[in-house]
Image (cartoon, rainbow, N blue to C red; front, side, top):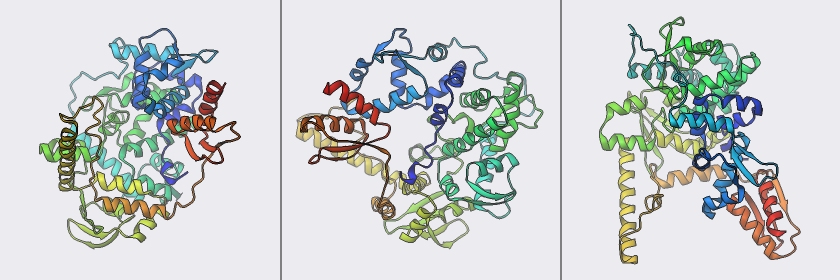
Length: 504
C-alpha cells in the first residue's frame, strides 16, 4: 500500500466500524440521514434514490441491469459501502435487497419536508444585539484554523492552541512531545497539504475517539456534527435545543473554528463555513475551478468569502522555477517542505522544485499527488485562465474534427463525455509528470493483500473470471500463460461468488 492511502480514513469508514445498533440509532435523526447521503458516492446515491420510495425488495440480479458493464467497479464499491453502513439489507437467501427501514423513513421525510421542524436545529428568531455577518464568521474561522496550522509548523510568535486541540494533535499522531514542546511528525507533514475539509475531518475523527474514552454518547456527538453540516451560514441557533453532551461540545468546536459564540454562556451560536461545508461538495478553500470562475466573473468580493487564501497565488514555470506571491508565514513554511526556497521579498518568495526537495518531502511521508493538489489549489489566476483557454481550444478542435469525420455535428451526450475528454491542466505537464516520476523512484516495490486464483480447468474459465475481476477493478496481476491472477482482499468474495454462479 502506498503512502497516498494514509489519509483515506473518511467519516464513512469510521461509521462502518460502529456497531449496527449505533448505526441504527443514528438513522433516527433526519439530519444525519441527509449528511450520510451527501457523503456517499454518486453510484451509491443512485441506488438509494432508486429504492427510497419502493417498499418491496428488489432482486439482486436486476441491479446489474441498472448500470452499464463499464460501471461494474463503481457498482461493486457502492454496494459494498452501503452494506457496510447497513443502509441496505439482503434477505436470507441473498437474492433480494432493500433499504434499511429506519433510514428510508427518516430520509424520505427529509425529501418531502415532513421531518420535525427542529430536526435541523432551532433558528434563533430573537434580535441579536451583537449580530455578526458572514464576513466576520469567515475571518473568525480562518484565524482559528490557521493558528493551529501555524503552531504545527512552528511559526514564531504563535500562541499554543487549547488543551483540547493539543490532545487531538497528539492523539492523531500529527505532533509528538510533551505539553507545549511538541514537534510535527511525518503524518503531520501530510496533514498540512490536505484540503481544509480533510484536515477538519481528521481532527473530528480523533475527537470522536476521545469522546468515547470520556463516556460521551457517540450518537449525540455524531448527530451534532452532522447537524452542523446542514445548518445555514449566517443564521444563529438556540443552544437550548441541544442535549447536554452537545452543549459541552460547543467550547471545543469553537477552538477549531467550527462555531462562534461571543461568550461561553451565550444562548445562541453561529456555525461557520468550516462547519456548513463538512458534508457538502463545497470547499472552504480555493479549488482550481473556483479560481477560474473568479477570474472569468471578476467577482473577487464573493470569492473572498469562500476562499480566505485568494491573495496567495503561485506561478510555476516549465523549468521548475516557482514564484509565490504571499506574505503568509504559514504558506511559506509549507512551501519549504518540498521547494528549495532561494529568495524572499516583501510580498513574494522564489524557489526551485528539485529532485532533492521532492525526495525530502517524500521521505517525510508527503506524496506526489498531495504536492500537485496543493500547487493547483494555490495556482495564480493567470495560470488558471491560460489553462481554461488551452482546454477550450482542445475541445473546439475535437468538435471540428468530429464534424469533419462524421459528416455532422458531434453528438453531445448527457454525461458530458465530449467535455470530459480533456482535463484542466493548471500546472505545466512536464512538472507534474516529473514529480510523479521522482516518487516512483522510491516506490519500486509495492505490497498488496489479496488472493491468488489458479488451477483453472481451461483457458476459457481463466478469461471469464479475470475479465470480471478487471471490470470490478480488483485485479492486481494476471498471467495468461500460467492461468493465474491475483485480486484484492475486498474483491475476493465478489469474484468467488461470480465463479460459483457462472461456472456452475
